[in-house]
Image 1 (cartoon, helix red, strand yellow):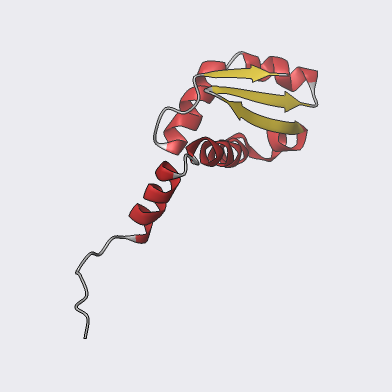
Image 2: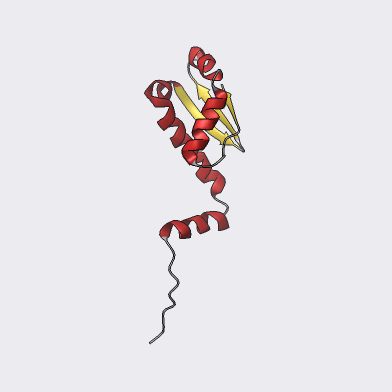
Amino acid sequence: MAKRLNNQSTIGAVLQQIIQVNKLQPGMDQIDVKEAWTQLMGNGVKTYTKNVVLKGSTLYVELGSAVLREELSHGKSKIVKMINEELGREVVKDVVLR
């Protein structure tokens, strides 16, 4: 009978390795940032959010309300900080509100 190697890894470690080998991290960041935006901004902002796109380290958010866009533009640095804290690493460096 063949001897098994005791080569155990956690599922999380194996998935992380697959993500790194296949260069899937930018796509995973895109998904994570969209989820973080929805969770952190709440239902009021979520209703007016049309699109959230991460390109490089810049987060582009399309909003349906000019008043809300103006209000959020005053707290861009806080939004960046909150999203990065939620993700546990620095993914977003700038926010562009459209």
